[in-house]
Length: 140
Image (tube, rainbow, N blue to C red; front, side, top):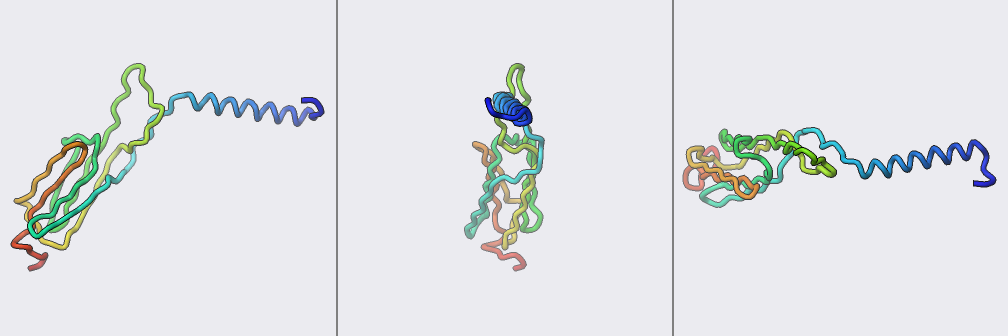
């Protein structure tokens, strides 16, 4: 680097060292992200007979979920845990959120808690709840 002042050469060397450290760090495994509150995607549909909630919860164990119905509000809460690292394996990328979640949905109809079912299949929790009465509107 002919023609550079000693100060410029030192700055260049510092920059070169930082760049190499950054490039080397890219090949190093990262720590998995900490647990945090997250929100699974949902869809709700209804007809004259029932309301159906589908909630995307891949990786959440059935034992880690709770479903409750109070009035016309359906709440699903739970926790997704990260699988423990096995010997010799390290995370290089970890984008799936882990930790607690809670979603509540209120519909405009009275619902019958005695006529509710829940099924977990392929990472989707499907909750089906019969509408109270024949097409019963809340409050009627």
